[in-house]
Structure formats: C-alpha cells, structure tokens
Image (cartoon, rainbow, N blue to C red; front, side):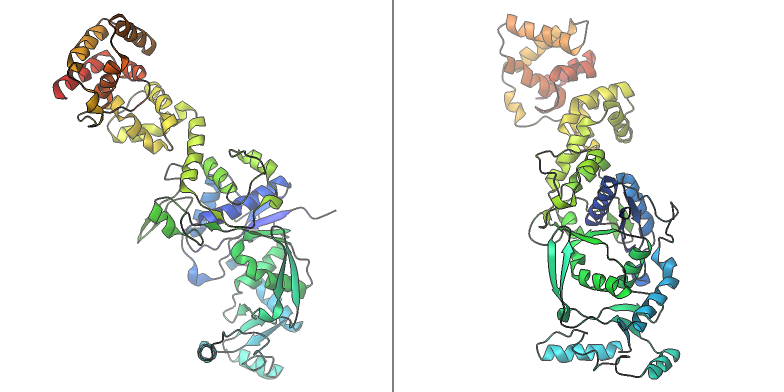
Length: 501
C-alpha cells in the first residue's frame, strides 16, 4: 500500500505573501484534498537576517481568509512538529555530519574575501566562477587538508561552511510531474552550501531533511525552484531516502511586457498582488481582501492561472476545483495575469451574493456618508445596482442619487432638454401628484398611458425625467428609482431641474 499523500506549503516569513505563493498553496491544497491527503504549512525561517515580524501571522491569516487553511501547522495538529524551522535547529547538524562521514559533503574554510578574489580573477578572464569539481581541491577545503587539521581549525572557532560534493560527469534525467523528463549535467552544478558555522542550515539541507521527516510525498512548488531539483534529488540519494515526486508550477507573468508578476506591476496598474493589506513604515501595500474581493473569487481566478479542466467552464466552487484538479492539466508555460479578468471573476461572485448580505456590507459605507437607511431599503437599492458593480465599494457611486438630489447635470445629457421640455415636465408633475399607489409598476403604467393618450414621444419625457432625478442618463429602471425616493422628492427634483437647466 502506498504512503498517504502529504504535501506542504513552506514559505519564508520575509514579508507579505505574494499572489504567486498563494497559488502554490492553493495547488497543494487542491492536490491534497483531491487525493484524500494532508496539506501542511511549514515556516522556513532558517535565514534569520531576512525574518520580518508579523509575516508568519500574515501567511496564516491569508490562508484562513481564502478558505485553504492547512490541516497541520504551528499550534494545529502538530503530528510532525515543530513546524517552524528555527525551532528544529538542533536536528540539522547530525544530517550535515552524516553527509560529511559518507563522503557526500566537505568543510570549506574560504573567507568571503578569498571567494571575491576568485570571482574577480575569473571575470577578468571572461569566465564565471563556479565552486565545484573544477576547483574544490584547489581551494581551502577538507578535501585537501588532513582530518586532524580540519578538526583543529573547527575547534579554534574558525568560520566554515559545509558544502555538498556534487558528483562528476553524471547526466541526471529527473521526472517532473508537469514538465516530464528534465535533463541536468552534474558538471554544471555548483557545490551548494548546506550548513554554516553559526549552527544554521541553508534552505537546501533544512528543506530536504524536513520534507523527509514530515513524510512529504509530493513537492509542488514554483518554477523558480526547478534549478534546485538536481541538488535536492541528489541529497535524497546521498541520505539513502526515497525522493518525493516533484512538480514545478509555471510562473505568473506580468500583464504587460515580459517577466514575473511583481508588486511594482500592481502599483503601476492599480491592482493588488497580496491577499491581505501589508503595512510598513514606507507605506501600505493593498490587499485583495481590503480591495473588496471575495475570497472565493480570488481562489477561482488563481486556480485558472496555469490550469484548466479541459472545458470552457470558468466558474468553480472550491469543492468543484478539488473534484476536478489534476496536475497533468497544469500548463508548462507561464500564465499572464489579467487584472480585468480578475475583476470579472469578482463581479460574477458579487451578483451571486445574497442582496441582504451585500446590503450589510454597504451599510458602513453609507454611514460614512451620513446615511442610515433601513436594511430593507438598502437591500432593495443593492438589488437594483449590483449587476453594474465589480465591488461593494462601487455601490455608492452607482446609487448616490437615491440619497442625494443632483446639483449638477451631465452636459451631454442636457442636449435632451429641449425648448418644450419644461412644459412637459410640469405636466408630468401634475400626473405624478394624482397617483396614490406610488409603486414602480403602477407609476410606469399611468405615465406611459398619459404619453400614449397625448401622443407624446417616449424619449421627449423619459430622458429629461431621468436627468432630473439622477443628474445623468444612468442608473437602474427609472420607475424603481421613483418608487424608492418617493413622490415628494421626485416632484421636488423635477421642479429643481426645470428651474436650473
């Protein structure tokens, strides 16, 4: 029987979670749930120099908000804890020593100054300095000094790193679940640092050890980690462990131009690249949540960046995504981020929301403007305008005329205000004054009967009527507006238009 599927999302707490990282977490979540497995979150904070306070909590809050919270993490079902790498620090030295003892790694004492000198020397000759089999026995390493001398230098507190001893003259044919067989030449790989004399492992060692100890069966991560795949597979081989299956997801690309989507692209084009708002002394980076996106819309949009189910379907619930997700349908090529499509998804989710729920979301915006209508009235207004909105934050702009009479009138629309319009508007006031059942359907029937009976063209009245109430030729069904603002306000606005335009 095969091992139960276990996948992980393992971000570094170096700042807010980029939307590319969110998609990696999502694909891991979908794969785990589709296969009855476990999705866990591990915080990779071995590089303490890049640690940013609050980032870890931010990552957890973002996954919770999106509805893709891990099954195991810090403080939750800690089956293979700790889930914070800095708290696993004592584990890694023994594994680094194991690689030294088995001949898969060596000590290197080169100072930063010596390595800089080697780099400059190579640059002057038009070459690139790579620390590997070409030069590791010419540099300051335990491969060329005795075991006694090595031990003595370590005991004296000399700074060192432990480097992986990459095999020579090997062609590695490695299987990626998305890209198929990927070929690497070992001679082109450098001998990566695995462990430092400060007692901290590098990402490469900690990542492999933790994935093994936490029984990770599949590593699903971004394309930027593809160059690390040969080292990671070789490390599994060196330890005598079975390697997990690897899948490298395509990049999320800029909307305009080439390259990977960055925060700068979002700032420039006015869309968020982080799930939640992130505050620093330099300022605030906007988030999807604070911009009024529904988490379900964000998840749906991200799922289709680099994956589809082979049909024309675009709207998927999280449950449907779980059911249909298949790594074999993930694309190799990068996926272009489309901010307009992003908004379209949010619009689709907004119009499916319950009107009363949207009205509750709209209430604080109205309160800020100084209005506290009943939930019933707000719900009615929301039902009339939501089809035109992508976000709840747009509701005020789409409905302000329900609450405030226009003081200015659209210049283009004023062309519909002809010489005979004031007299027709005065007649309309007389018609409206006689109506007792002031409901949309009834008002519409009576006004249209009056127009027909008097052979007055519809456009001659309807456009000036809307202009009087709204200040422009926009908004929902005219008679719905009339019913909501009421008889007195309707007449008052028409009267003001007659006097003003």
